[in-house]
Length: 83
Picture 1: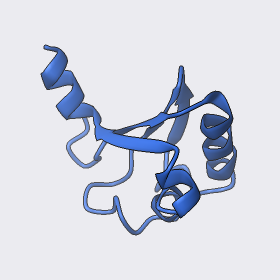
Picture 2: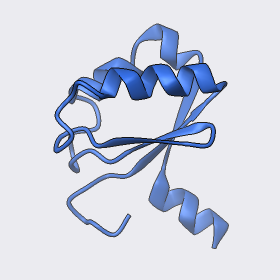
Picture 3: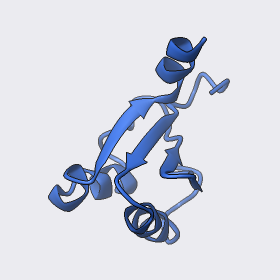
Picture 4: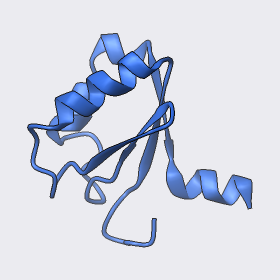
C-alpha cells in the first residue's frame, strides 16, 4: 500500500474456489504488471496506477462469472476505514 506507483486492491471472494480460480488464472500472467497473491477469502492485486481496467487480470475479474462472485475494494480505502 506504500508504493505510490501502484493501486492496491482487495478482491473479496464468495468462496475459496473463486479465490483459487483467480489465483490460478493470474499464475501465467506477468507478475510485474499483475502481481496477485491469495489471502483468507480474498485475492490481493497490486497493478500499476492507472492500469486497473486494462491489464490481463483486470479483464479476468471483469468477466460476468467473477462479477457475480467478487467485490473489489481499494486497500488504501479499507485501511482508512479501519484506522
